[in-house]
Image: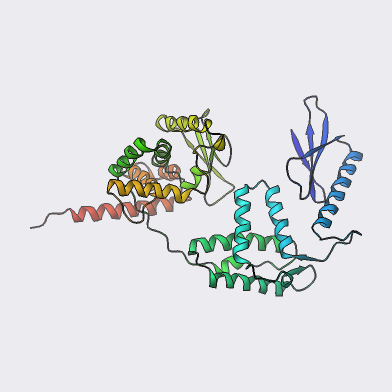
Length: 378
């Protein structure tokens, strides 16, 4: 058992209890990497002050190394934007965000803040110049929007992630709170999801089964669960946030809208066979230890290209189709079998019943259209 101790000094202190019931102090200085380090001190008020003193000393060392404090201990009242980015990314790591997520935050920053930008131009102060700094930040965003060749989805992704850095600046009193993402985000026209028919899905599965077992099992996962591509690429056995528990036969997915909420779906026999086979394959490859699918989380494009090649080989290629078509197919089959809407909502993990009804209306319109086209006249 471990519990955190509140402290005004940047860094964290933990109290851990041994099997004998004794409590000891562990610390992690601000800006340090890795786990908390044992001090070898029992938990007492006197030793707690010692731990805080160590944290304070380590924090000063950090500020001096980052050139945010001089050797005499005088903290500067201004911070360079690049050093602030390092602070922001360090906090993200301390909060246990994945390396991929931290990398994407830094990537968004590098896309928006141009390489030609004069580093001395954007220095943040505690006491003045806040409005001017917002203007300079916004100027960088406008320049990015004018020069980028990114599509609107990618632009919004970079703006959204850059906004987190802006929030960090405002939380530290360097600029006033401002939502530049909301001001500059691009309008997105939702893509029409083109579903597969049951016959097409079986053709794809049979083709993949003969040529690429892992890809076959991945497609089977989409077909059986209606899971999203990103969810399965980030899923692990018995590890959050997308966790597969084969002991209790449950899958735990994070809610797409409310990231702090989770939804659980049961594992039925056919799905269990697929998951156990993927676990066998994954255990043979140390690069994907614990992952449900032996692909990297950034392999979305590769997977959809594989799917497109199979469609072309089978002569069933249609514009706008991707792995999401299997999710739509599952919903369609549930509608066809008159499964209650509240059950479909839970299976598809829709944010509300309105989303389920919207999907049903699309299915119902398609059914009416096909019925009308099939009418024989004269």
